[in-house]
Image 1 (cartoon, rainbow, N blue to C red):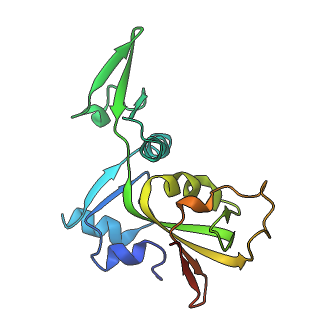
Image 2 (cartoon, rainbow, N blue to C red):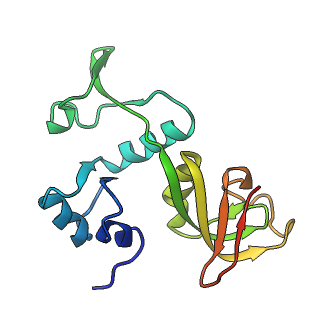
Length: 170
């Protein structure tokens, strides 16, 4: 079985903790976790993306009813509002985000295709360094502003897929 994406980092031992909503298809993550060589935090998908969004926008966390009264509640702050209990989920940020986009202009403005639009725009806001792999790099002004999902101001490095081309924002 071929290892792709971030699985290469996990398999090579370059990751000490994984926070994910699902690892069922990643055998290396499962094996390393089971042998206690990798820390794993499983988070429901909606909670996961909201924690990333909170990190990207400087919020102190989010409140969610998901996980109240289950094992997910262990060790977390429970807040009751208007008779309903919520878990306080803390924001997630990253030192580096590895993002995939369809195309960019030389300023780093990003256009996504398909499922790359799901989490990548949010993750780009929550990292100190944003490295983006794209299929195409267009000249400045070539993108319709209505297509741009992620503004270039938060992109640090563009890498053209299958090429040695890369541009670093100065």
